[in-house]
Length: 291
Ligand code: NAD
Image (cartoon, rainbow, N blue to C red; front, side, top):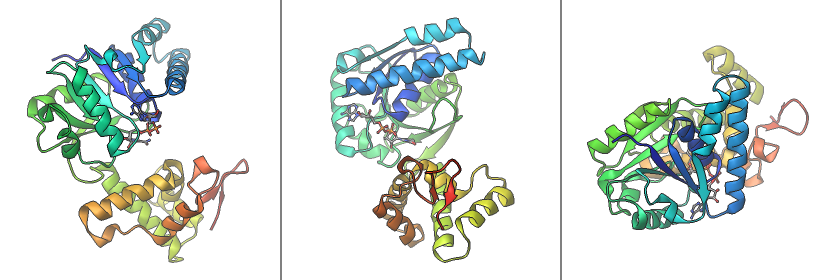
């Protein structure tokens, strides 16, 4: 099956990026949200991003215009009726996702594939909410979607091989590099990244190093482009804590215990860049370490 008609649920940060890359890859895209404002915001962001690509000659103006013409938005599930693949990227809340999946199954053709962009909910459990657990897969895109090359493809226990093959092919068509992951908490990238960030916070908490020394050590000592605390601020400390909780609970191993200092920062509302303060203070031009 060559995927040419795609649906995306959720016009947030991720859904917007996913809709953009699908339209640029030549697919007709229908993007749905519960909020008209979110949809308008998504269209404006995609238009700006595509214009930027054209201005930098990464795509031609004509291809940019064609991609925008392939994109439609709406609040109504009828728009999914002829989709071959729908990517669910709504808010990370299991009840919301279950409701979305129920509504999708009512309108989608029987052979359409559904994937979810969830970061932390079991793919197998979500698949079981649908009438097509074999044609269900996790597609975990990275943020920002248009820039990041990777997509993790996650099989639930019921996903069939043909579905994996079709979605793998589709990921290549989007210009992404797919890797395969099993359905365990945090998949591959966050399973490795978040304990490293958590350990950086322990290193700070135990006084082994300051914010500046920890980030400098990892940038210059391991050639990471960003230090782990800087990166945690960029991702959002609430998101980091949420992923540590799902690793801790899902794998029941004390090595994933969230650092108490990370918990305190989140309780204080020091959530990183988006809050103006995390491990750095962002109120002046140059971020200032807070410890
Ligand atoms: P977001 O909060 O930016 O956007 C979520 C969107 O879903 C909002 O526009 C909201 O209006 C919409 N929505 C809520 N309920 C809905 C419903 N019933 N039907 C349709 N739309 C609904 O969130 P996001 O960061 O784009 O994350 C979306 C998904 O992607 C989540 O599952 C998240 O775990 C996952 N994810 C996020 C990141 C990231 O870095 N932000 C990375 C990888 C995966």
